[in-house]
Image (tube, rainbow, N blue to C red; front, side, top):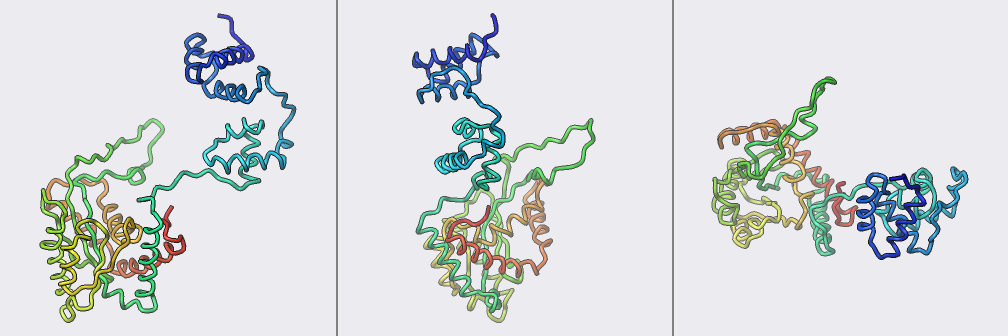
Length: 353
């Protein structure tokens, strides 16, 4: 078959457009006849768009020179308007809409409009107005109650949470990186699967360090019953050993909004034990010390290691905790306040990128 030129292909595209074929069907039909010679689907889309706008000429628009002169106030305004209307519009689409080169669009975007293309940030939850307000109220309370001017009050606070630790924790890509020679292949590591055995640990601490950790028994679930009848009694007994003179008197207790934590049974037990509960705002791991610092720190130490028994895993978990200097816990509580301030500055939104 004799090679067709651009104008021939455009005539076929126009014919298919008038027949009522959509872009995908037009592309498939042309590929089945012309194979690799056929225009790309994106090119077909471009011409369909031209035809819909009433531009039926099959010839390229005359473009003389265009380099720097294409960066005009008119084109800058056009690009700005298009980007404002569609923040996900591509450089190629902009070039087509404004009838300038991709290089010109890049110049307008970066040098004249000061724009950069970024990915969306992942957040735990899309917060509504009430949830943002709850976060703001919590942060204002924390800053008012535990400002650095009176950091001694931090010694009254106990915080904690539960987390799953896997018997096999694959290394992160950064941790597994190494130098290789030109004739060598990089190592491969399997993706972490959720069928790997795991063990839940609950950890509680204060400014002076770890108070107690508790393992959830195998085949048990983290319920309010386990939390109030097994976990918290051990923690509160440890507090009394930790502070023999004062015990639980005057202590404040903080945990997140997990179902076992917010159950009426749990709230009643904490109140009966004589502790004041610090209410945590929902969907706020960025304001919970275990989530934003302690658990990630422990898990980094366990990455790339495999454990074959509950005892091995427990010992490794404790070793990871022991590697954390006691002074870090005091600093962690200061970080907590700093995060509260950042949350306020962000009007209750998530503040990490």
